[in-house]
Image 1: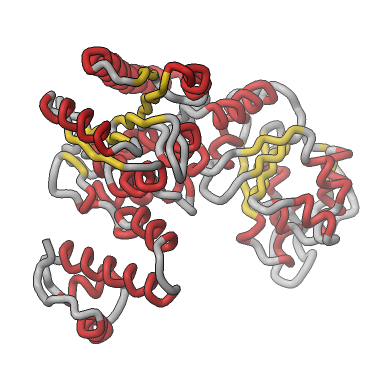
Image 2 (image 1 turned 45 degrees about the vertical axis):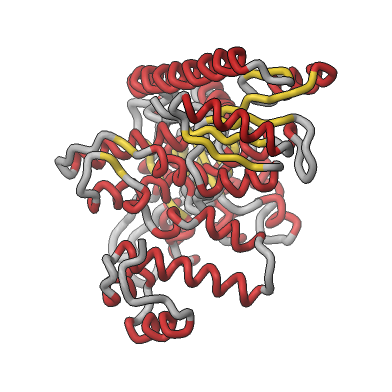
Length: 456
């Protein structure tokens, strides 16, 4: 099997010698003279393995390794080092390098080291696939993850599940806070009782108390009958309060009392009654800042934050992207009765490099979209949304030379060319892909002298 290998060395003769040798053995070779150039190539290409010197100008091998692992943890790195720097190479292995070889490079030893690394890569890939199949049956209520950061969060969730403690789940939108809350409930001794969820951000201030505590008939205008609140509905079970930071201050006082006394009063009633509810809360806002600014009660914050579980954003756990993408692709392929076997190497590489501001929810949306629109059994780069296709190019333009205007124009030209290619040169379709009018597109074509034909 041909592999894409990037050789990084500031000596031209070394690059050419290694590249020529590996090309003869069927590999596709890319070369860079220093770390910064290597990163540009990695952003553009789906590379399987990097062979890099330790000592280089601009960016040394150790820092390059660090940035490669941040960009795409699936890319394997082998270090090349002089005999006097073996300690540096072994330190690099602790930071994620798969192996090292000494200079001057023995080509037979190089081939052996590469074969070992590539075989290990294939074995790891197969093991992940097998582990995923097992984990889907044994996972913590279906939460799929292989990243250490997420596993740490799930470990806390599993340990706290059997307790009665309130839990505050924090993290950006789309990271799976409600999914973790449900997992805690179904792993607890309340699993056979109700799980009730309420999103505070979706309620107006005058409805929050009624939604949480219920009301009596005639308690206010429009209260034509008695209504049960979410606390009552969750009695003996779990209440999940999402976006808890949006609760108005006057309601926070009542919520604190309920948490402390395990009693509620419906609006319009003066008779409290006891409840047994385990409360889980979530927020994507920093509640500590809201406390400092007087927007959230400190005593309520401490009452909710008995145990904190923080869910990292997807861009900080990129190793989860392949397993999540594979999970979603099989789900939506089954729903749409389509035969889709997976992603091309280049498409998966682009998915790995995208930052996902919407986190797992956005990844799921992307996969559903490509499954619905795909005509082939393998998802290609061109099947991905333009934002994912061009994520790496956006980074490049932001770092390139030239004025702000020149960089913006270069990026615009790239987007327009990509849209025309994807639309087979049809301007109306390209304009729809870009979210602009056809007239505006024609203006841009003229401005940037982009030919009105299918770009190859």
